[in-house]
Amino acid sequence: MKRGRMNLKQVHTEQDLKLKQCQSIAHVVSSDQIEIKDAKVDNSSTLFELKKKRRSSPFCNLVVIMGSFLGLALTQQNRIRRRTRKRTRRRSRDMSEIPLDLLIEILCRLPGKYLARFKCVSKQWSSLISSRYFCESLYTRKQQQQPHLYMCLVDDDGQSALLSMSPTSPDNTTCFLVDQDLSIPEMGGYFLNVFHSLMCFSVRKKACIYNPSTGQRLILPQIKKPNIIADQGQVMYIKRHYIGYDPVDNQHKLLCTIVMYCDRLFHLKSEHWVFVLEAGGSWKKVVSHENYRPHAPFALGQYCYISGSVVHYLAWHDMYTCAIVSFDFRSEELTTIVAPVDVRADMSIPALEMKADLIEYGGKIAIFEHSNLKIEGMVVLWVLEDAEKKEWSKKSLVCKPCQRHLVQAGTELILKGTTRDGKVILAPFEMHPGFYILCFDLGSNDLRKVDIKGVPHHWFDKECYFDLRLMDENESLIYLET
Image (cartoon, one colour):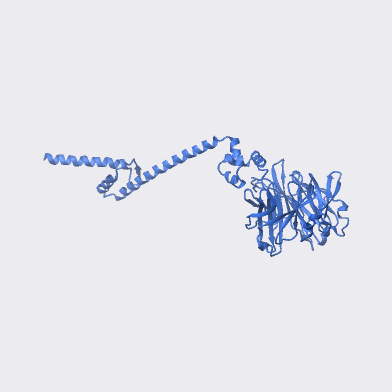
C-alpha cells in the first residue's frame, strides 16, 4: 500500500515537472491566443510528451510548435539587424573621419561616370559632387586630358548614330580612332553643338541634350504652339538649337530658332524660344526688340561663344544680306550686326555662293570666308574689332604650296568648329572611305591632316548627313532636370 502511494507520488511529481517544462515553451492564454515564452535547447522530448498528454487539443500543440520556430526566427532576424546597424555606424563613422580635402582629392581622380554613381552613396556625397566648388576643382585637375571627337550620322531613312573617337596615342593627334559607339534609339541627330561638355542636337524636331561624362540623355518637349503660322507656299525651316549658360542664375538654357519662308527667302518669318534646363522648365517665347529683322541661320552654319553666356551665329536677312546674330542667355536678348558688303562683293547671289562661317579669333568674332580655298588656296578673315562702332578688319591667308594638295583633292570642305587653341577644323562635304579632317592653324598658316578610322563601313555606302565636334573640355558632372 505504501509502495503504491510512493509510485503515485512519483508519477505526480514527474507530471508536474513535465508541465513546468511545457509552460517554459508556451503558455496558452485562450483558445485563440498564444503567448510565446523562452524555449530551451533540449525541448524535443518535452514537445513529444506534450503531444502525448494533450491529444485532445492537437491544434494547440501545432500552434505551440509553430510558435517556437517563429520565436527562433525572430531572434535570428534581430541578431542580423543588430549586426547591420553596427556595420552601418562603423561605415558612417569611418566616412565622416575622412578629411574633406582628402575626399575631394580621391574623388577628383575618378572618371565622371563613376562619380555620377557615387552620388547615390549618401546625401553628403551627392551634395559634395554636385557643388560648384567640386566641379571647379575637377575642371582644374583635368585640364590636360586628351580631347575627344564626337560624330553624329543620320541617313535618309532616319537611322542615326553617335560615335566617340580619341587619339590613337597621347602624343599622336594625327589619327583619331572610334573607341565607343554610343548609338541607341534617338541618339545622334542634326546640328551638333557642344558647350560645358554637354552635347545638343536635333532629333525629329526635338532637342536632345546628352552628357557623355555621366551618360544622361534628356529629350526636351516640342514647342506646341509657335506664334508664326506658315502661309500658302511657305515651309518651316529645320529648327536650330543652341545651348548656353546664365552665370548669374547658374542655369543652362537652350535657344530654339524657328524660321518660315518661301523660295529664296521671300516672306521670311522667324521667332525664338528659350528653355531653362531645370525642374519644371518649359518653352518661353523671346520678346523681340523694335528693330528686329527676321533671319534664317546658315544652312550648315556653325556658332561660337566668346563668353559662355552669349552665342553668335551667321544668318541671312535675304539672299544678299548676311549678319551676325548674338543671343545673350542672361538677358535673353537678340542683337544683329550686318556683315561688311565686301564679304560678298564678287558674288551674284551670295546666299547660294558664299562659303563662310563664324569662328573665334584672338578672343573676337571673325567670319572665316573660304569660298576660294579649293581653287586659289586662300581664306579671308573678317574680324569684328569693335561691336558698338561696327569696325571690321580684314586678313588674308594663303596655303603653303606644299600643302595645297590637301584642299584641292576630293570634295568641297566645310567648317566644323575650332579647337581650344584656335585651330579651324575643316571636313569634306561628303563621307567617303579614308575619311579625314584638316586642322588649320591661323597663327602659323599651317595645315595638318588628321585621319579618322573605325567608322562603320556601311555609312560610306549611302548618302548621309554627318556633323562632328572636337570636345577638348573637361568632364562635366552637371545633372539636368526638367
